[in-house]
Length: 381
Image (cartoon, rainbow, N blue to C red; front, side, top):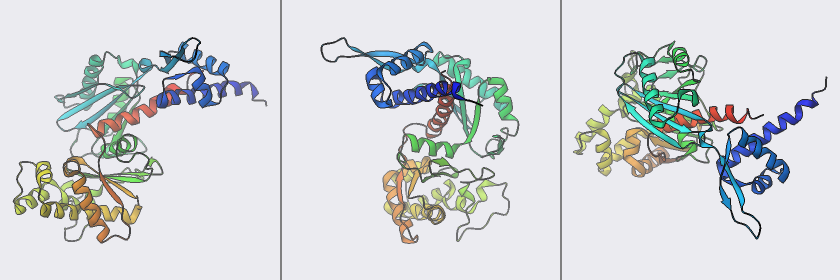
C-alpha cells in the first residue's frame, strides 16, 4: 500500500520542529538565515514561517538592516504560545514556578501547605502562581513536581517518602484529574541532575552524578544523557550506602539509620564542627566558615560515597549540591576530589553546583519544557 501522500505532511512537521528548535537556541532569525541553517529554500522557509505564525507559534520580533533593500523581519518563538509549571514539595513549603515555552520563568511563588491534602495544597499553589503570572490553567501544557522519596518508574506514583507521608499511591491520578494538566512526579535529586545538565556545572557532560549533601543524602545519575532511575526508582538512595565504621541499619523504614547518612548527615557534621570549634548555628554556616581541619574531615566523609559511586559508574564528573555542597563551594569540592583520588583508581573531577536559584524547581521546569515542546512542536501541521 502506498504511503507517499503522508510524506509531505511528515516532512513539514519535521522541518517545523527543526525551525522552532533553531529559533529557541539561536533566534531571532530572518527568513534567509533560517533557510540557510535548515537547508530550506527561501520560498519554503517563508511558507514554514507563515504557517507557524498563523498557528501562533512564532512572531515577528524586530527587523535587521541589510544592504540597500528593505529591512528583513526577525522571527522568534512566541513565548505565550504555551506555558509549563514546576513545583518543589517540602514538608513545610510548596514552591511553584511558571515558565513560558522559551524557558523564561515568569513567576515563582512559595506557599505554606496549610491543607493536609496534597492535591488541594498543590491545586491552590498552582492557581496562585497562575494568577500571578496571568496565565490560565488551560494554558499549561506540562507540570512536573519534584519531591523527596522514591517514585515508581512504572506508575509514576510516589512509592515511599518518609518526610511526606500523605504523598502516596493515588495522588498522581487525583492531581491529573483535578488540574486537567499532564502531571509528572519526579525524585528531587533527579531533577537537580537535569538542571545541572541544562544550566549548571554539567553542561556538555552526558555522564555525571550529582551528590546531594544536606538534611538527607541523594544521588542523581546521568548516563548517556539520560537519567538512571533503576528498576524500582531507588537508584541514588545513597544514604543507605554501607560504609566502614558505621553500623548497618536494622530498620530500613527509618532513613536516618542508613550508614552513609549517619556519616555525613547534619547531626554528624554538627558534632564534627563542635569538635573543631567551628562557629555557626546551622550546618551550612559551619561548612561555609569551617577551618581546613574541619573541611578536610567533611571532605573525607563525603569522599567515601563519591569513591563508591566512582568505582561502580566511573562518571568522570561529580557535582556537589544540597545545602552542604553549596555552602562548601569549590573549596570543599577540591578537598573531596583530592580525598577520592587517594583511595580510588580513577580521579573524577569534583565541582560545586552551577545552578542559580532553586535547583529542584529549575530541574522540574527543564523536564516540563521538554514534555511541552514535544507536544507543541510536533503538532504544527
